Length: 640
Image 1 (cartoon, one colour):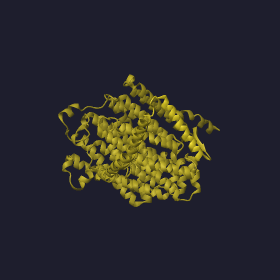
Image 2 (image 1 turned 180 degrees about the vertical axis):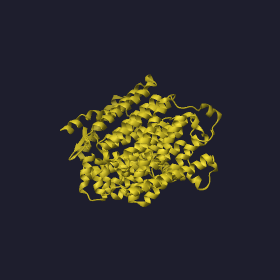
Image 3 (image 1 turned 45 degrees about the vertical axis):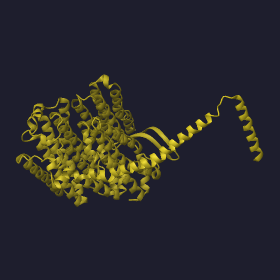
Image 4 (image 1 turned 90 degrees about the horizontal axis):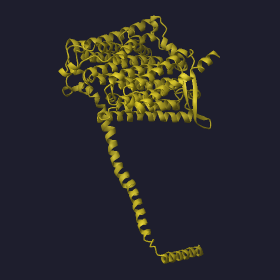
């Protein structure tokens, strides 16, 4: 009874979490021009209210409990009912806190970053709308509601990536993101149709109950999970649907931090974790998820080595880290994957916002070859960026070390070859991240005198979020201390009720012996330190500056040009599709559709012109025509 009363009082804040950003969207979009810069504070305040509601839910949800209720029934036929409802449990609460907490900091940062932009209020309207749809995605108690949020964030990402729409290249990047996400979304949609047909519904409880009557690796369950994974590949930028994310850096930097660090790109991870029982019933699919994640992690990490745009480096780092998370999910280490989602959200948002502060100081310059020596000019940005770089490199005791260590330990226990590949990926990550840091902040300044004169620290609205994120990038790892330290894994314990059934099916725990755990942590730390030392030797001690793109040769040129994957897609998919479209335009549109329309118009016109001649205005002629008509009718009646 006490639990029931506790859950009942959570219904109102659970309903308000998503309504505040929606209200902010309407206010800033309708009255933004009148409110001017106040619209940024209003939009930020709405996200802060959502965070407070999320925190209230987190503190008041009874241990091991979940709140599942329907808001309205959409349609019903036979035994199938489709409803819109909300599910509050440990998994959704973790995502709520990440989305609203980091979302608020990014909104606050944007007040300073976008201060002089003519589309200031429009930008905050889009941000609030994006947060609304992201909250719908994680709050939904069914795949139907999740899909609404899924499509909503896709729309908002298009609007935000192409925010500066006067630039055609930015519009192309927005369209690329939108189209590639639609490819993945088709897989998600087909998976939903399969679930509706075979499982009799789309809400999570119905699906989880229905699949229990199927054997492990049943063809239906494998098909459904593979289709859902296609959706996750598009949204979370996995091979082969990853090329949209680096191009999405065309949007303002706060967009990169919000969409491509903490929220949208993690939607695929969340969807698989929410469907953990379904995926646990399909080990064949988990194998595919694991290897796609491994391939994406190491492939994107290699590309990141030769990128010189500070945001592009972080973009490929995001793709690589997402691959690491998918590898964890594929091994059945769902808590480890989610733990890295949380720690990654802190340090990657920090790095993106730090990059934005650098770009702000440099007057819009993004090429690290034109930077250098910024440590003494923008100290807060430099120190917080260093913390984010150490965290993502997996150096203890910062957050990235603990979450990466969990995934690597899981790989060592189940797939040694995966452990080797992911360790290599982690080494490369430490190298290229410190490469960026050293090129940006060490040695002497390499930019122009005008840029040097412009150098200054960002306003407090930008530096305060950096400091807060840096603190969490430092301490968040302690929520998931490994057993070797004799501490309770708080994060795993909190999420365990969500993954309990899937664990019993997979029948594997990812805990190593203490000696093995110490060995793995030592190897990971040593590998990262070696990578950092190599980067230091090249870019600080030897003061090496990457050569111009035109002078890059051999394999380095392939890496710098991202292995020409975009060009491959353009030649193999885009251009043939354009040729087919041109052919169909001539054969179908011109020769069939246009011909039918034009012929119909001509026939109607000719008939009208001909019949018009009958209208003479002569009463005698009309009388004669009537008599002739009556005679024809009588003749027809006699004959038939």
